[in-house]
Image (cartoon, rainbow, N blue to C red; front, side, top):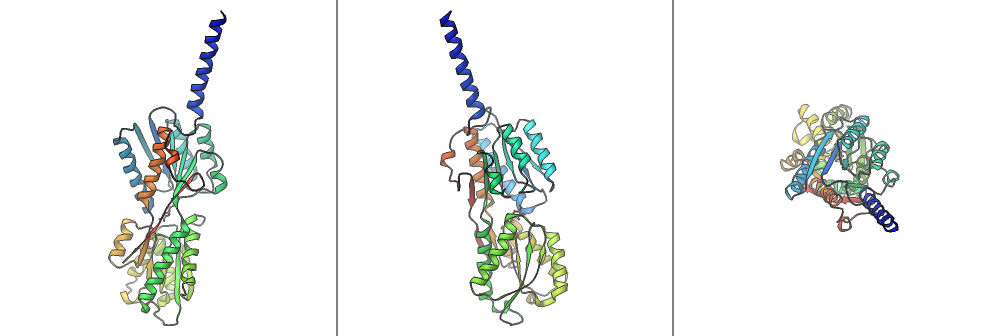
Length: 335
Ligand code: BGC
């Protein structure tokens, strides 16, 4: 009788240990099938679409290497409420790893809560949640790039181009009259890129005069509109356009093209991202330079995390900054 009880108790303890390790372990996803649910802020964003393509390729690679993996990608159309619902749906459908490019980087509470209740790790990417939110749970990660570095590089490219082309200062007043096209207010890449690009130019001894700025939310058509307004205000005075991304630099160029400006009356344009259209414009000599936002590297870092989460091992081989952040370096692209 006593012996039977002992076997029963040992059996119970064993089951509890198995259950605990399945639900509570930090590194693994529940079940053997990996279901990755991806949601990104807006499916009309050029850079994000290219980054998502790279990520899909990475996931195909994991599938080919034998991992039983399903990937669902959703665009949130710029609505945080839609994105929260998408996360709920994907969790309901059995997703066990989430990749989230937040619509509102200051509002991840609902998503984090849902993930935590279901013990599903989240890889945030490109739109960085604030540190306080990132510390709410130990299964939250971030993959992106250092905004300041991209601004500094854009500033350095502009310094070189201005020095190499003294005719940039068309009115020969010893100063460069410039305008800025900014991404979404509140996005870590907008304010920081602008500040660090302008500071770099100043530090390197370029005298600047800011004529104006326009917020164009990363978008080419909006940038064209803002630029048309700035041209009508300042006519030929604009000598330099610093845009927080390539699409907005291209939008600024569209505005000049629409107004039939001749090449010699054009300012220098700089972007950031190195999207396909951006690189093409650099090669054609239309964009003076851009800064490569390493989408392949970011997608590959996300894939490494997915793989380690799925296998329940290998996290220790990943090089994190402050335990949960991975930042890929930018690089300069010039004519
Ligand atoms: C990119 C932009 C993109 C934005 C989306 C930035 O890092 O440079 O092109 O629109 O991310 O969050």
